Image 1 (spheres, helix red, strand yellow):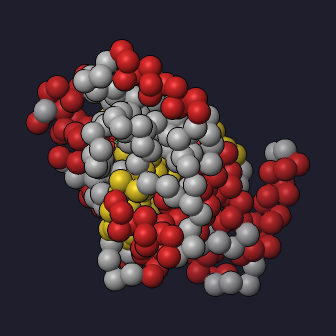
Image 2 (cartoon, rainbow, N blue to C red; image 1 turned 180 degrees about the vertical axis):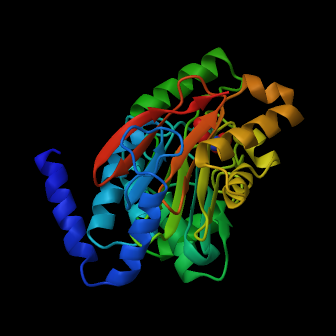
Amino acid sequence: MSSSRRAFMRAAAATVAGIGLLRRRVWAVAAAAVGAGPDGAAGAAAPLPVGVSTWPFAMPGNEVALAALAGGASALDAVEQGIRLVEGFADEHSVGLGGTPNAEGVVQLDACIMGPEYRAGSVAALEGILHPISVARRVLEATPHVMLVGEGARRFAAAQGCEQGELLTEERRRAWEEWRARHPAAADTTHDTVTMLAVDAAGHVAGGCSTSGWGYKLPGRVGDSPIIGAGLYVDSTVGAAGATGLGEIIMRHCGSFAVVEGLRRGLEPEAACAEVVRQIVQREPAAAEQAISFVAVDRLGRFGAAGTARGFEFNVTCPAWGRTLPGRLL
Ligand code: SD4
């Protein structure tokens, strides 16, 4: 074990000491019973706490989420902090700052967050706010609503003191101008999403998504990522699932909700993801040619991913190890 991992383990141990120790011990025994393993094999459980996220670019966010958990943060806080980091990456073109704009050259962002007790917050088609995941969190904490969109969401974010700014980088503006010159009417399917799931040491589960969505989309287009049940679903008594890929397909099948229902029926995370992808392709054969992938984690720390996207990878980080793993290709 590396010295930084050892330091992490010490910090994590200090954090949990004295707080509901008995409950946590019982929990650890339950998690160990499903088979901890560092190899990312289907059905293995990561020692808690654990963070899971889509795409290699989100790995630094996973590390931030795990450090937060080790410091005593809730799974909800950890997810927000991890995703905030990724939203700030100007060279990542599918999330937050530096995201790909819509057809009119405006970056419109979608995000949501969900935690224990089915509490959720979401924003869509949000402009001019640097961290949509934190606006989603404010919707969850400070309003009786679940989802705010467009100008109303922007005004709410500003009133809440959320950081405002221009999200369109010079590099993305030039790419958009080139796209407009070449293909004024063509869709561009450039897209990705950071979806992050976390289970804390006590087995509480949370998740979040953040994306700039489908590159050069029609203004006002909303994808699956901010839709509770489509891009993300968390049932802290069972686990969590999130999606990446073509939102129009994922939304039509309540994809993430369906994956969590698979976990509830006792499927392991990878199998639950695979089952939903197969169902979607059975209902919509054309979906097989599109990128649709799911990640999932259950409350014991078992994790998995599956989808149709060639090269899809996901990150798993726990106190003992952190890895980027291939999702199962269907
Ligand atoms: C969307 N699901 O807006 C997002 C984009 C994405 O991999 O995740 N692409 O449709």
